[in-house]
Length: 520
Ligand SMILES: *[C@@H]1O[C@H](CO)[C@@H](O)[C@H](O)[C@H]1NC(C)=O
Ligand SMILES: *[C@@H]1O[C@H](CO)[C@@H](O)[C@H](O)[C@H]1NC(C)=O
Image (tube, rainbow, N blue to C red; front, side, top):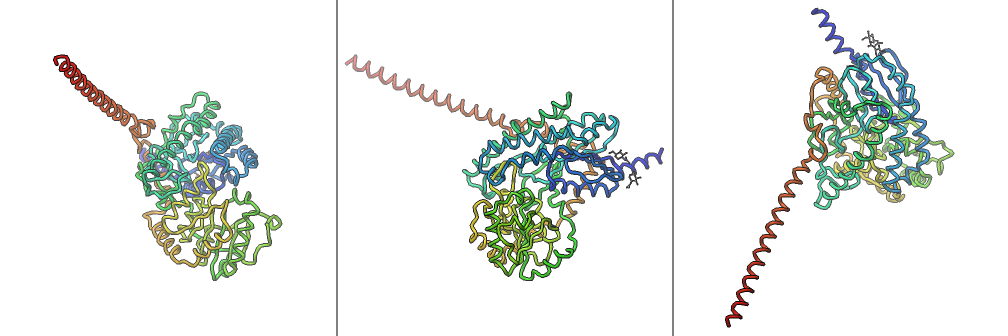
C-alpha cells in the first residue's frame, strides 16, 4: 500500500495529463503559450494541445489541430484594410469582431482536432486544463463530456488592464484604453475613463460574450458554461509593472509578465555580421506580421527615406516583402529580412533603438534588454491595446510615440535622432531593465510553480464569493442606489416641508392682514 501511494505521488508530481485549449488564431499567442507547454513537458507532464496553431506531435506531447480556422480567418482579414478600418468607427469594428468570433467557434467545431478530442473516452482523466482566455474560449464546452471535474487555469499573453476572473476595474487610476492620458487624471478625465470602461464592459458582456456563448450552446446541448468557467482557479497573465499600471489584485491572478523572454543566444551568420559591424548603433524596426504585410507604399517610402538620411546608423527591417514591392531601392544602411531573431537582436550590445508598433510581447523584450522604444501604434480600436502600452511606457521616460497614419518624414527623422543622441532614454531603460530582472524567480518558473500548486491543491478557491457576484452587486452599485434614493427622498421631503412652512406662514400673514383690514 505504501509503495503504491509513493508511486502515486511520484506519478502525480511528475506526470500529469494536461489539456491545453486555444482557439486564438494568432501565431504570437501560440508561441507564448508554447513556451509554457514546453516547460511543462520538460517537467515530465503529458501535454495534449487542442489549438489553432500546432506543431508535430511527439511522445507525451499531442497536438490536435483546429485546422479549419486559419483559412477562414485569413479570408475575412483579406477583406479589411486595417490602416483604414480603424478610422471607420466602432460599428465596423464590432461587426468585424462578431464575424471573427463566429468563424472561430463554427470552424473550431468543424475541425479535425475538435472531433478527435470529442472521441476521447469519457473516463479519460485530464488532471488540469489550461485555456487561452484572451477572448472567451469556445472550446470550454467540450469539457462537458469528461466526467471528472479537473481544475482550470486561464492563460493570456495580454495584461490585466481589463480584469480577469473576479478582479475589478479601477477607472480612477487605470485610464480606459481610448483615453491617451497618464494614470494621474483630473476629474474630467476620471469621468471619461469611468464612462469608457463602462461602455467597454457593456459591449463585452452584452455583445461579444453572447456570440461565443450562443455558438457553444448551439453545438453542445446541455452545457453549463458558468459552472465550467467557475472551475478556473488562477489566471496566468502577461502583466509586469511597466507596461501595465499598479492595481490591487486577487491572489488568483499570477503576473508572469515577460515569461516568453528567452536567454539570448549569440547571433548567427549575417545577423552577427550586421550587428557587430554597426558600431555607431543598430536600430531595429518591426511592425509585426499583420501590419507589415498591409503597410502602405507612402508610409514605407517615408520610413526608407528617413533611414537613408541617418546614414551613419544601421537599420534592420523586419519586413516580409519582396525587393520589387518596395517603393524605392533600399538605402545601403538598411538591411531587410523577412524574419529576424528578435530576442537575440534586442540583446545585442550595439542595439540602440527599437521602432515598433508597440505590441506587448515585443516591448517587454525591449524593456528587458534596456532598449529605448519609438512607438508607432495604430490609432484606436477596441481590444487592441497598442496605443495604451505606448502611452504607459512613455511614463518611464524610455519612449516617444508618433502616429503611424500621419507622421511626417521630418518628425520621424528628428525623433529618431533625438532618441539616439539624448542619453536619458537609455539611462531610464537601464533602470527599468534592472528592475524587470530583479525578481525572486523568473516568470516562467513562477508560472510552472503555480500550475503545479493548483495540481497539488485542486480545491483551492482564491476568489471566493467575489467570483459569483454580478456586476452591480460586486461594485455595490445597488447599495449606492439605496443611499442615493434615501438621500434624494430626504432632500425632497425636507424641501416639501420647508415649502409647506413658508406657505403656511404667508397664508397666516395674509389672513392676519385681511383680518386687520376688516377690523379697521
Ligand atoms: C498522454 O495523453 C494522450 C492523450 O492525448 C494519451 O493518449 C496518452 O496515453 C497519455 N500518456 C500518458 C503516459 O498518460
Ligand atoms: C512519456 O511518459 C511516460 C510516462 O510518464 C514515460 O514513461 C516516458 O518515458 C515518456 N516518454 C518520453 C519520450 O518522454
